[in-house]
Image (cartoon, rainbow, N blue to C red; front, side, top):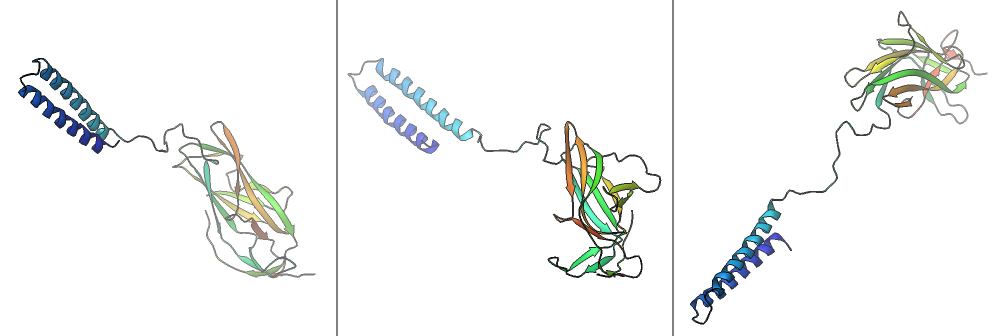
Length: 240
């Protein structure tokens, strides 16, 4: 029963019984003890019902599903976010061949800038960064030069060795091991080099967070990176 209905019933009952009490008081045949006793009972019931109604109206709403924000919340599937940007890029126009459509493929020598940020307010240790070659082809197509920019933790990404590898540039030659936190990201610039092949590849970033370990796949919005070796002479690969 709703609070309004209970209140209406309580008021009606109290009024009706109050009328009976008045009639009993007015009657000469009513025992003297009955009217006060009925009055006390009626008053007690009325007060109890009224308190019940008021209590229902003031009680805070409960239930529903909330999302906690405490430190005990589970970590996301991967506790870090990776953002990729290609700079200093020239492109090859690669004509269709067989089932392959026309493509625009970055030429060897571009810089891949990788920004890694920790999520969920926890520090993550980055323990390895590993290139993974998915395909190799004979290079082909013609060069379309394009300008770009440069910057931070610099590595040369060598795609010709098997397996491919990262080579530190300049004085930053310690093993790949960095920490990122929500307010302290790392930026990596990879000079991507292929001299003999048209390479389709991705990156795998190993990480450690508290008692967990994992590997994050890095690509271009769900597609692998593609890199074309530059011709030894001229700007075009001959197809033979």
